[in-house]
Image (cartoon, rainbow, N blue to C red; front, side, top):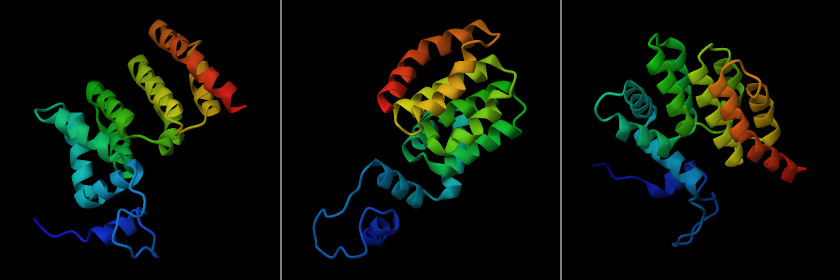
Length: 179
């Protein structure tokens, strides 16, 4: 296994400032920096491969999905969205959005409306879960979540309406706290 320049990696992912010189646990290495370091160590191709395998539902998919959930980030989100757009199999397309649930952060918000144009009620329920997770994790504003979830409360599909009705009270409470 190759030696890793941990100091350079820490600086690259923002876990250590350019002025840090002490030999200690100086700096910050929270979840965001740790995920960025993992993504850097694995490389974009490995992250994309993990997403593809997780979406495939083949043996090892659960492990790949857990790797994606740990790394998260733009590369994983983009690969989920690419697969959603390109796959023809509805179950695999749906799984790409399920993986997006774990891979996504606030940067996925602009793409959610595209996903909601899909006619699949199953997909809409997964999108509702993604929106809820992002709002509760403070990765998107509650107002943005409400803008997506409130129309779902009047959807034609009973299960979509039911899920929206279940999720909306917590998001409304979150929005009230923000004002």
